[in-house]
Image (cartoon, rainbow, N blue to C red; front, side, top):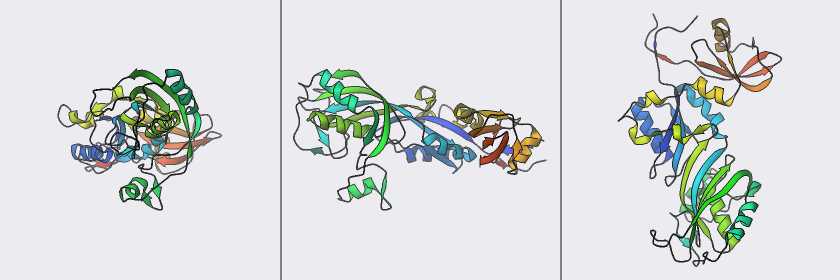
Length: 316
């Protein structure tokens, strides 16, 4: 039977266009206050300098974030050739002498970009959030330690130069530097700052990131996101929550259940479903709520992750 008329606690996925100057945790804190719940999390940290798509989960839907973190991502960024920095971005102290990048031709840049594309071994930036002996790498660097993280395999499926510019007169851009506006599509765990560092290093002039914007996470685009400042002012964030079932159905095959099947799945039982074998299938109740992600083998569904339908109030 369908659920009672009890008031449903907020649950769902919200796409936020994060502005510059706030941490991802700061975005979560804003959402918690606006929605009146502590159960808010995010998938994939953006540095304070970065802007763009941050995918947040609310209530039981936070369980979906595990499956969103590993999706491929797309970024638009600006790489400044001519100087390396301690953090591989504009916020770090300059390292070494300024290099003259103005004489490097486009073919030379394209040749290095080709070596940084496809399946590559990438050494993450030392100021990343990767843990070293239980402590974040960036914390060790800020404490004065020298940290060099081991390389890891990542996939850069797109690394295109959209425009080459002379940044002279822009802020503290020194003479001889070159700005490259780029678009990068990559696997989860790829560091765009490291691409800037490695491009500049290979060209012999140094390089760092001056701007970064995440435009896509898996099938979700920043064009569909809400600006953070609009939440709680122009509209209530609850009005921008995407149903967990709709999000899961973009990621996995989905199967609609009847109420008897829904009850059994809610109790963790194995049920028969009309679906092909798959490691993850979203099963949805008649009221369109996401019940679980299940593994299907030989038409038998086994719960992998359940999504409790949290209620507030007293059912009649």
